[in-house]
Amino acid sequence: MADSPRSRRMAGRIRQIVASYIESQIKDPRLGMVTVTDVRMTGDLHDASVFYTVFGDEAERADSAAALGAAKGQIRSEVGRQTGVKFTPTVSFFLDELPESAKHIDDLLAVARNADAQVEKVRANATPAGEPDPYRKPREPEEE
Image (cartoon, rainbow, N blue to C red; front, side):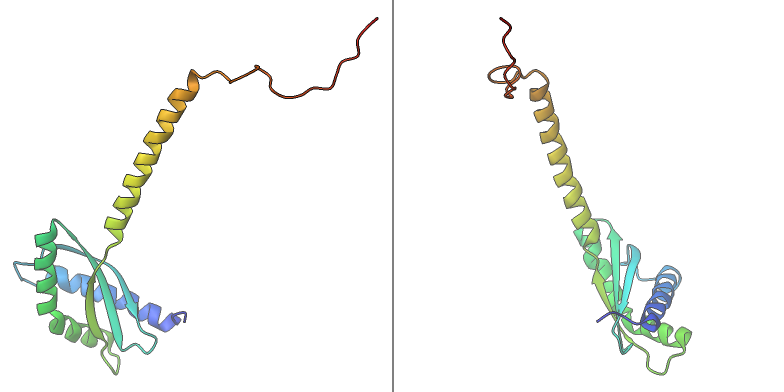
């Protein structure tokens, strides 16, 4: 089911609210460099899934996830206050795996580029097996 324009607008607004709240209001020392990448809303506007990335290693990701989990209620209250909707959506945080997937794809493309370069290097000095012109040609009439 395609999401409605209202849920897209609400998701964009929640993204702004959550990002600014994380930046300015959460003082948890466990929170690392968090970037809100996307927010997805259910069609009934009751649940918001917030996707985020964390700059750092696995320990910093775990600490940031714990800090966001601890501040979930405050963030939901702020979303309800700033959106003014009748039912404040529940907020769930999910680590966005897209940067890791993109890095994996970039690594695979680099391997393919190296393989292509090796094939090109071998092809540069290669000669055809057999005659130089392997295609059949029509017979030329012999002169008498």
